[in-house]
Length: 183
Image (cartoon, rainbow, N blue to C red; front, side, top):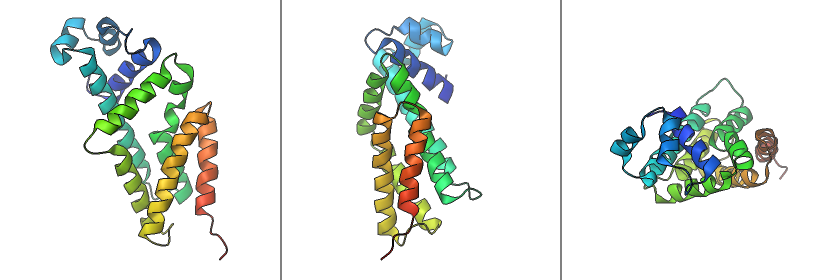
């Protein structure tokens, strides 16, 4: 049960039925366990939700940060891939599932409740990546670029109708931020 596929299967159930209508039976079936096993492990649907959302967010963060360690790719390509893992891969869930927006709201609430804020962690790591790859003049400039990229990814999540559209929008933002401006 403790893997990204398990987290995603629970999230998919919530996205399909909505939190209120999803049953413990639906959730157990998605995980390939009995309802009794699920109740023994979690006791409540809220606990299943918190486990799945928290695990999924940690997995997203790990995959996104892994993209920033690939020194074979260009700075722009590494950033694009990191933002695809962080946000872009989830556009389809938001747009096609009957309760996709509810799942995004649940995820946003879960992020606020976490003591170690994954969004801040990601933003800080993007800034560190920009400094390490000499893509920003200094640490402060890298922090501002990372902030702009994270905010752009949030906006693109809302307005993009596909992962491809998200990728194209992020590519444009990344190219704009990485292009030196005349002084």
